[in-house]
Image (cartoon, rainbow, N blue to C red; front, side, top):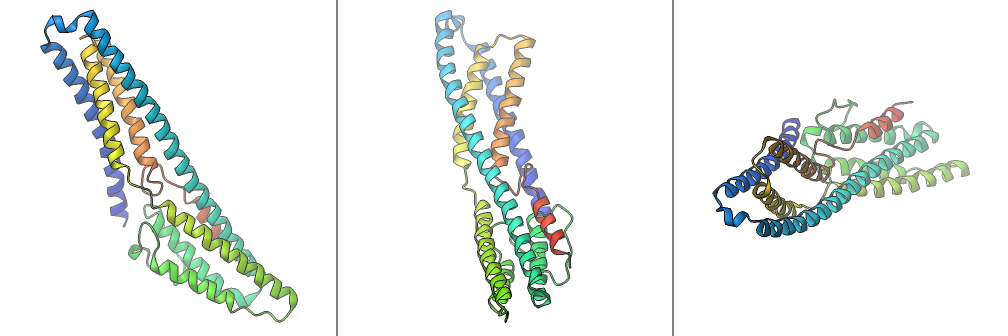
Length: 274
């Protein structure tokens, strides 16, 4: 699984280099086109018309880029919040079970195994925690719902339903734990849905086409001077990096920028207390 995750990151980095290559090729194509054009095509009137169209494309592309970057960043932040909320609810459920005494030790052990397996399967490139009896994370799905994890969570729920304290205080505590378990299940599904990000490959392709036209027009307009080439190269790298960030943030658990495992690890550390 770690090798597969590394391949995903390599693909993301390759996409960033592909954006640089595409925009650079567009700018070079524009410069070559300028070189082949007759002087009458480079008149002040024609160049002014090109600048007007280029300005329209730049404005439109800038708006789309900013909106898309904002959208993907918001989705990434939401995934991070959902993960932190999920970790907090798991720790809260463990604390509630701990208060019921030794009778909940089997359920608490299941929670440790579950949390450790979630950490190991979600962040395979990081050191995996070890809990006796935990499922093999290498056989688990990287995204979405995993049957082994679902079985553990369902077993925890069944153990909670089987709790029948004889005293009133214990019964109230058990009911509170069941309510927390319900919130854990809801938070779990929110985290699962965060991994099902819609594919924006076609949108990225269209946006890349627009930006290629922009750099093509820049290449036509830019004079053949070293300073112009340097400024154009800076623009290529800047825009390509924005495209890379947009693509990467849309993969909150698989890209270079990914949701941190610290909240889940803190929750597991809390569960390890007797």
